[in-house]
Image 1 (cartoon, one colour):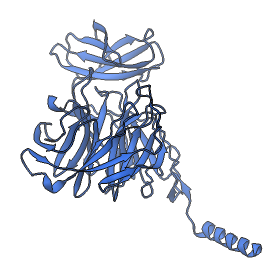
Image 2 (spheres, helix red, strand yellow; image 1 turned 180 degrees about the horizontal axis):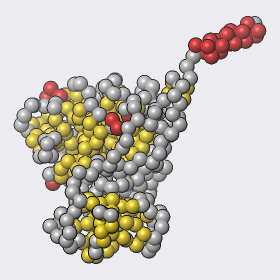
Image 3 (tube, helix red, strand yellow; image 1 turned 120 degrees about the vertical axis):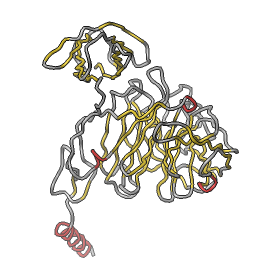
Image 4 (tube, one colour; image 1 turned 60 degrees about the horizontal axis):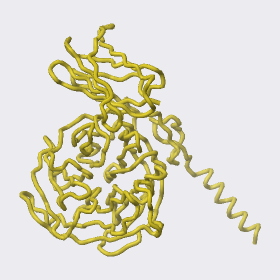
Length: 419
């Protein structure tokens, strides 16, 4: 009997060798691309990728704590987080103006953190849990057919209540030192998938919930070390992509994780590429939504470093089949690049391009928005460029923002990292 079983195993193994497929990295943009690989084994590795998305517009003060985005009914929608009105806002994709307000009549905004949708429903996540002690976690489910094409309205929602089975019963005493916060949800097929915001270990865990109203224990599906805090998620069904948005803890650098070429609902089984955005004038990026193909919009809350804002983002340059060159957004005549970034030495240069002669003022801020230095800078021309030197040897490790203002009061801001 043992000989027979061994023979069957051997034949099956030989069949796999003869007719099977080769596992490896299938992304041509990866460092370890294997042109002979026919099955993506999730092993692709990438160089550090820095990108500066284009600022689209400043959002209205009424949604200064924009904490989630979704695109449906041919409109971009957002919401405010903890303590805000139980309202979802439709905003104009051209200029960010509010054009519709839909109040959920039977809801309270304890800590709304994200929203998602499918063909029939909108889901609003009231599951923010900075303390790690909340047990009244819920998702409001609203029929799209109840939302009018125009004008403000009040609708009713059904409710999905849930809890984390692995959440400790003992009260957590240290705020923002737990792994049971959540600010990201997306609808995929018959389930809702939540991505945790792990303050303690900087990972994210994926939980699944049914879409039907009721009381549930969230089912733990998977986890991944994102090296940061996940604050939004969205799913591009047509292209088979997932984007996780977030920022790094304490240093507040926005990032995205692009997940693509994965198997089924195992979102971390395929390619996992991180895009860091240290040069945008924002820190709390909390909303992300695909709007057309691989084109997307991300939003950030108001902070001391900047206003509530919306930025353009496109995943195609990284998730396309063919390799492509990533070019940071420029465009504006008044601009500069910080070099090197990150900085390990005692000096950085601001390489300024396309600006007229005149008086310039340089302002330096730390990651909390505290103004550290103001100085008027003499600009020295060198091979057609203007260069400003800034000494960094007295700076502690961290993230800093430079704002350069010209004589017409036009300003450009960039962020750099001091190691």
